[in-house]
Length: 219
Image (cartoon, rainbow, N blue to C red; front, side, top):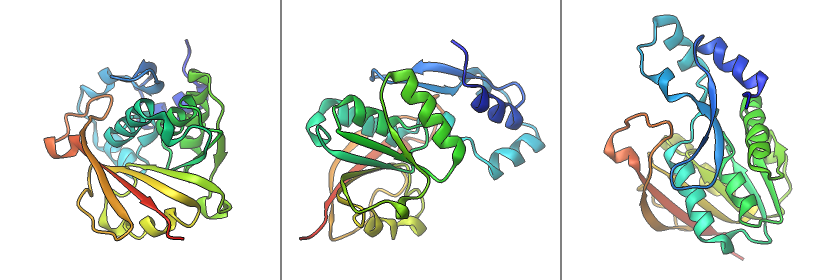
């Protein structure tokens, strides 16, 4: 199976020898187009490092929180079954795909990055699911039953987003491995779960613990 041409070209412009491969995620039935793990086994030169820092190809990894959230939905499809769902900062689309596979009535993958949306389209096709796509969360109507969020907080400067999620959906389900001790009156922690980024980046143990939070908008 050949990798999507536009995504492979974009990755090649960052890392000339890098290639995308279709991989089934550990502990999941979802497959994604991901950077070949063998491409991560060498040192990057200064120019490659600069490009990666300026335009990180986050869409070709399945980050720990996204993988945990996808597994959560697979094991508990009642969270999304028959509901209208938006995946905020969708990246590879793993959470959106999980919601679709679990029986959501509609799933919108939302990301500012055109390459991320292209990855979502390619990964949806790989898994035989149908998604809708959006590049602007704030252009969406307040019509969603659930907003999914994985690996978006990662910095405390992003914590104000917690209120915005509930401006477009009645509930929010947030998974994050970086900022996992925030205090917000509407969010309660459901679980602390083990996960890892795939391909495995050998991240510190603290980043392999994913907090899952749930919030419901007040009536």
